Amino acid sequence: GGKIPMIPRRNAGVWFTRWYDYAAPDVLDLVGEFEQRSLPLDVLVLDMNWHKKNGWTGYSWDKTLYPEPRDLTGYLHSKGLALAANLHDASGIG
Image (cartoon, rainbow, N blue to C red; front, side, top):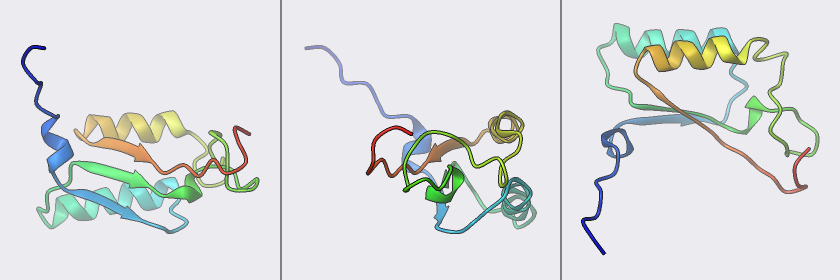
């Protein structure tokens, strides 16, 4: 029992996702464009192209698109954004 907690506010906010081969600089530009246009953004979803393309599975970053994933995730968090990563684990963890 007990009181049911509220979901984080961002979960009911503005989410952006697009299936596209965004590289880290593209993501920075995208966030900058939201800021430049004074558009709200709470959650950025990287669709399935963020990870290695070995049968559309796994948890390993595609280093050609995201050579320094920690830098990107740190930047997004510094902007107050939540990050979600779309995962297709059809073949298991790779």
